[in-house]
Structures are given as structure tokens and as C-alpha cells.
Image (cartoon, rainbow, N blue to C red; front, top):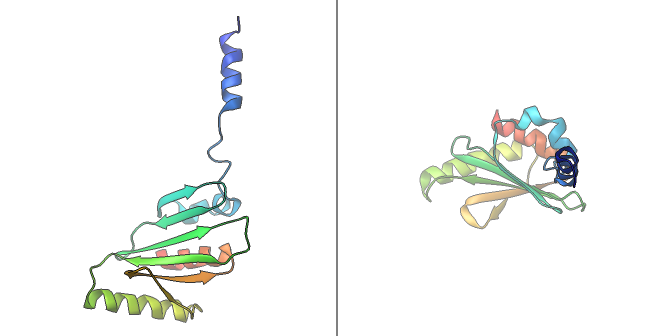
Length: 132
């Protein structure tokens, strides 16, 4: 018969470490993201991050550490189709272009558009600027 302490030690060693899969850049810059992310999903190949709303806008990105693919950063404006959406969308696209992101692509529905960046550091800088 096993003691309770040995059973507990075995139980603890078998537990999955939920924080082991957080990317190093996320952990090292946690203060940048703390309280500003609405959703984080991590699986074995991809991580998805969704910001809190800022002026009715969200910033999302998908990061895949196992590939050298560009990182897709999507912006969504939470407004119905109309003049206010068009104005806010054009303002945001102008801001992106001023920050060096010349190629802005539509992304599915009228409220969404996306850019591609090469490094996660570019995403972090963009996120900091977006949330400021």
C-alpha cells in the first residue's frame, strides 16, 4: 500500500505544465500583454492572440514557431458596414502605412483587414503602439 505523500508526488509529476507552452517572448514581455489580451490559444504548432477592444477595434495575430512563415496580424473594427466603419478603417490603414506597413489586405469580412510581418518583435512593437 502506497503512502498518501508518495501518491501525491506521483500525481504532481504527471501533471501537464500549462505554462510550459507559453513562448519565451511572451513570458519575457508579460507586462506588455498583461490585462490587454482578451484571448490566448496555444496548441503544439500555433499560438493565437486577441487583444482587448481599443476604440471598437481588435488586433489578432497567429504565430507559428516551427515555421519561418510571415506572421499574420489582423485588425477588426466592431462597427456595422457604413460611413463610420469606412472612416475608421481608412484611419487605421493610414496609421499602418505611416508605421511602414504598406501592404494592407482585406481579410474576409468588410470589418477586417490584415498585414504580414516577419518577426514576433515587429508584432510586439505594433501591439504596444496599437494599445497606447
